[in-house]
Image 1: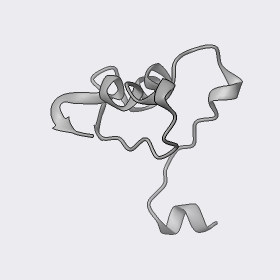
Image 2: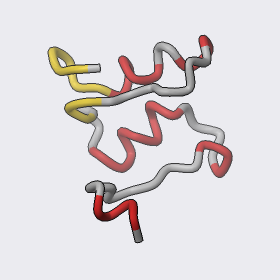
Image 3: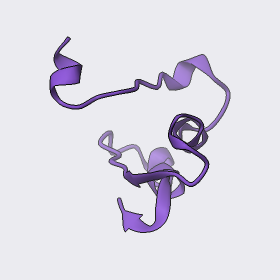
Amino acid sequence: MKEKAFGMTDFINPHESAKSISQLVKDVAGEVGVDYCFECTGAASLANQPLQATKMAYGV
């Protein structure tokens, strides 16, 4: 599996849940959030999701 070579430990398919992407990330990583989060689609509707998924005072 190539994803493991790049350090991927979990995969989230947002189409499998009615929850927001940021909540799905917190469900996997813990309610505090993740250290870093990248939104790479460029979709304006997703612009705030990385901020909500990231720990306060960490990086987006």
